[in-house]
Amino acid sequence: MTGYTSAPTIELTWALILGSARNLVAENTSLRGGGWQQTVGDDMAGRTLGVLGLGNVGGAVARIGAAFGMKVIAWSQNLTTERAAEVGATLVSKDELFQEGGCCLHPSGAQRQDARPRRRGGTSAHEADGAPHKHVARTDRD
Image 1: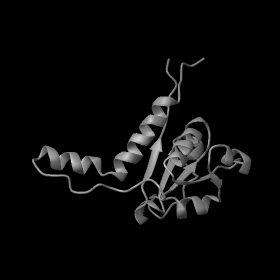
Image 2: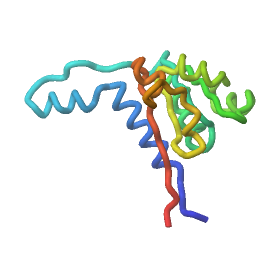
Image 3: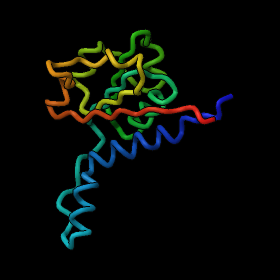
């Protein structure tokens, strides 16, 4: 037993997604500088969440996205339609995931490095298009 739990990674993932959607860094900076709230950010309901891999972390993140009323899509090399449905997601092709995902979750790791479509220069083909991408990882605790 490694002592690993998925909960902190799942919670941090949603903190990053929600913080990005609600512009928390900019809003915090404005308030601390004596200004007012500038925006309310984006709603989660109705947005598309793309999840690359539906293991422990990806599956839980997908369930939470579905609870927010998001359209959850997923792809993984061995993902089945049944497994995707278990967590409230729809299985799509890898290309569809990156084209449709308004916010994409990428569990980090060597096995995922070649999964993202790339442009010349090594940047993601979709980062330049404005879709936020969150890379999350976990480590085993000693």
